[in-house]
Length: 407
Image 1 (cartoon, rainbow, N blue to C red):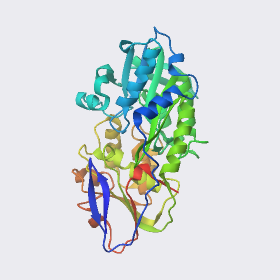
Image 2 (image 1 turned 90 degrees about the vertical axis):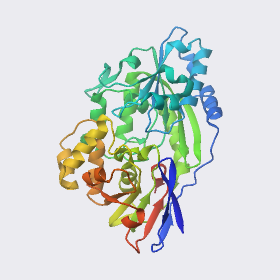
Image 3 (image 1 turned 45 degrees about the vertical axis):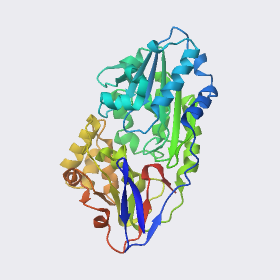
Image 4 (image 1 turned 135 degrees about the vertical axis):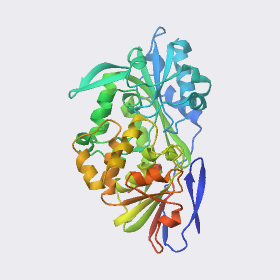
């Protein structure tokens, strides 16, 4: 039997005739019409409507997701701009900020593809141009200047499983996406990431998520419009107060994405696809979601195998370069994990988490355009999936690894 896994914008066919195979496919929920769902959410938000939170003379910034998130930002922007117009806030009073964090800037054609007719309002986040707006636990909270200087801050977002925040979205889009290195360094440092409760799929009693929510209060994130998705497509939208929006959509996502699996597998074959398989930094999320999630289905010494294109190699942003520098300079995962436990630069946290996973399991990347980068980073490359899985292996196939919660 052949199995289809996402690969870039298309798919790849994998046959494992010599292996017993189990497929982990979540229920997936029911896809919704994005525009209709977003309009309903904005009209019936958690807390007051956006039109009731702004005055006609206000300037507004809307922080949107970047190329690493498959968020329908063009539609969400359209709905938010229409709501602002109801309150007398015209288009010229709005700045759209691409929430990059420490990822690479989006090119003009990418912005146009993502935002459509609203691309002319957009500017890439620049972490070198930030304004401090407050502190939490001694950590300065800084925002990109065009965001900090507007009267009202809004955001879009995708509420999906996240290694540290439990689920992304809510205040995270603006606090991290349009934030300064100070809060990125604090939230993604070994001290916070090592705390109990910082875990994929968990928002309750999660110190990382709690910090984001508090930082959103300090930053004045007034209103967000988020969606969540599954293999079926967009399966929900919610708007209003960030905490309530995340809780609402996380519940929807858990129901759609959770799969009960056993353990003792020799290999997990994990699908990623675009936009995440553009680079190794994003692709490794599949491995850490499996190994460091709520339930690791691998036997001791088992491996994760991921087909990924990797046209950008390790990645082109500041964080991606730091990720590559740490991994490529390391002799082995244990030594790297110990060294990074003493501290590292913002953006390098993915190397820290990957090192933690690699201490127990090998990760194989197949079919990529940049095999040398994979080998440089303490992982293994194979030309095909079949080359990376030993005959007779007991295999768990997770076709959409970034949108499946193994429980």
